[in-house]
Image (cartoon, rainbow, N blue to C red):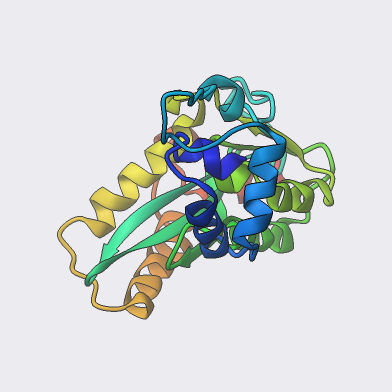
Length: 236
């Protein structure tokens, strides 16, 4: 139903099945058709059509537990995540990122050919392996279909994380991540032509792991780098 809502009811069972397979969720057209029929919904193809956008857009949405409280005094208390797209040769590639709001450090990231559930899980998996946070951590994101998937949410909750989501159509609820993507594109992506996925991955690795996390002075941190801020915080 999330995919049906994402395409504003323009897709019927055959196309929804194709989209789900592209997201790494194999299913048959007949299975999708039965699910749609059980919910009494169908694609836009006739006068009898009725589409309840608001109700469908609310499926599997977590409350906005973050509430724009971006200033955090403790590491691994609040993380935020999002996806952006980057042009490479003749196609889009997609970058998912997880940020610790206390230090603004990028603690997890993943690059892939499509915006799959596995993309956001891989970024979160890197962050969890690196940080091993407590079960009180708030994990924030927008309402993208990947973040609303049962697979992603079950994965996050299996580590005791509390899910939080931005309000509908409100990018300011995830402002720190929007700011990071803006700087990434200005300082790295714009003006550069990438000819392969491996070339782009190497460039992003250098920017995040070497420059941004270890060297770039962040205005929200008193112009310290995320790594220096964390060292000083832990030493205090």
